[in-house]
Length: 177
Image (cartoon, rainbow, N blue to C red; front, top):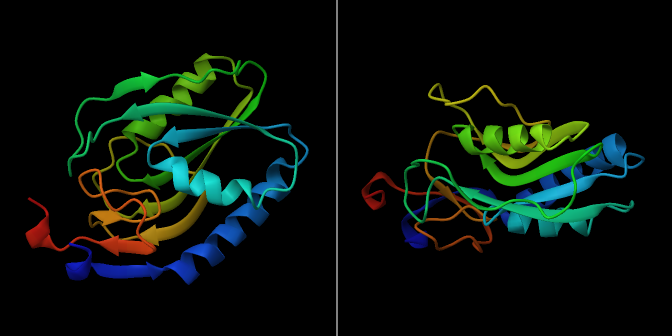
């Protein structure tokens, strides 16, 4: 499958973008005592890559909310795990692989706000450009602009696989069954 896909961003390009994102996040949050909230499973790789680049005190937790369930189209949001840490009064940075239609990230951000977070920010490795968003949620830190194609690599999956691809790839139309 990966052999048929189009490489949009190489590993070198993604790593340079992660360096840039880390610098911007550091500038914004280094004195905020933030809680980083990894969105599983897609946000796992970006979170791991960014953690090693953030040289200031922070706490880490995770949330697991999904709409895709190893498929290529979204459905109803399913909450699998809420954060363990107390969010009240905290600056929370939600980390995910991609901002696509926005429904999942909007629900997570709303959950954080409802749980008392003082400030909720969102960081995504990629943001898709299209006109069929389900939400008006916006990311505060965006690494890459992506076309409206199904993507995999660096946390993004194709039917549960290829999150570990060494770049960001677009699936061909014939592989989107």
